[in-house]
Length: 48
Image 1 (cartoon, rainbow, N blue to C red):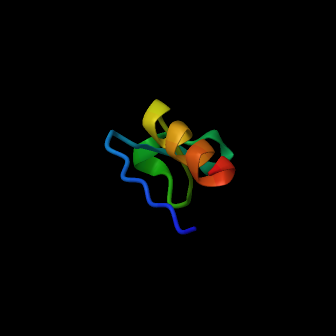
Image 2 (tube, one colour):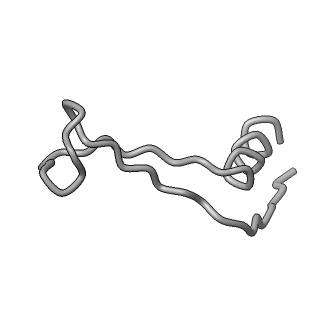
């Protein structure tokens, strides 16, 4: 059976400068996402 889900909500993109530099002086960033809605959608995707 093929199940579908639609999730609404916000996702926060966090940019961390490498080597603990200030944001305006950094050239490289590590990106990660977070947010309650994104976490719930991920759990729904993994568990079905």
